[in-house]
Length: 516
Image (cartoon, rainbow, N blue to C red):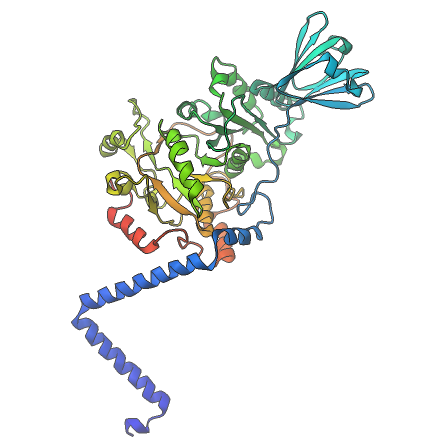
């Protein structure tokens, strides 16, 4: 039977096989040329996919779409359930239970107090958590009242309340600590509800500023002093009480000379969990980060960890240069602060510039923690050779899965909160970067500024938190990543905000990720 007599489908099949044989012979005759053609086609397809990823939805649309799935507070970028308690006041109550509130930051005189109806027959003074009330009587006696209810004429308030001529309401870290210590000292401390209380400093900052945010337990109190001293701007710290005895050590710390003055620019939030629930044994790292973000009063935030210390020049650069760049950006942008680790035995002056850091990197005294997935995408080689980018203050990198950078962002953009289902270590920061990428953030790495991690092989965490033997409640690969794929589709890990993902990734690869 001739070829023309074959059925049509058979003729097509034979022609396809013949074409494949011709292609194979041609490809083998000119392999280099043909590989170049395949490479070029792949490049074109990558660029097309990138453009499609940019054009289909805006970051705002992706954010709105994400929020339709965030049905529980503190998950999938949604805000936590409740903001920290910052209500500072004193209540004056009469014998019938009628009360009135008197706010902080001023002295209330007798003429003002007596205009209030509840002060006609005063019976109690209730001092709110974190508040100290100072009363002055006609005889000139001054009494300081701490947290709790104080009945007129009894031991804690041994005066006739009608003789009070002034009331001063003050906010104080020690007053908050004393109040929480009282709760923890009670015989029924295990059943006491959670306390999330914020103490604001007397020093005020503009909203157009950058707040450094960190969270830790009592074991990091001394270590984080280094970061406080090099960051003259606003700071938001969240202190977690892993056990009911921790508050004693916290109080002893702040009673030391100059510790309170060190916190002049710090918003301090103390978190006491409900110990009866047992959830405190797994350090709620992302919940604490969210509390710190909520307590911050500025539009720009820099979330970091307690074992890191920024260089002395980072704050001034962030305020003078990064804020203007974020203000004029027409797309969500995160300025990544590169991080290096410095060995515990290093006792010299810590580096402030790349030039000072380079010798430490070459000698092995400084190194990149997790130079592959964790911090490799930051582009170590590029960061350590800033001259490559000339006068540019930052260079762009593309998102890669499991990356866990630290960044400065505008929290008023579609900026997600951290997912609170992550506890202890593992996936807590990676999940946040993954979500920011899915929304469409562009990642720019600072060229001349960084922070360093202070090694602590002998330092342990307080309580049962960060016990890696504990079974994970929620994981990055098994739980979180499949959830984002369901929400954003199979391209959720594609670097949506990157200007040119294929070229940028190749550039970092050529320079050598994690290679010094």
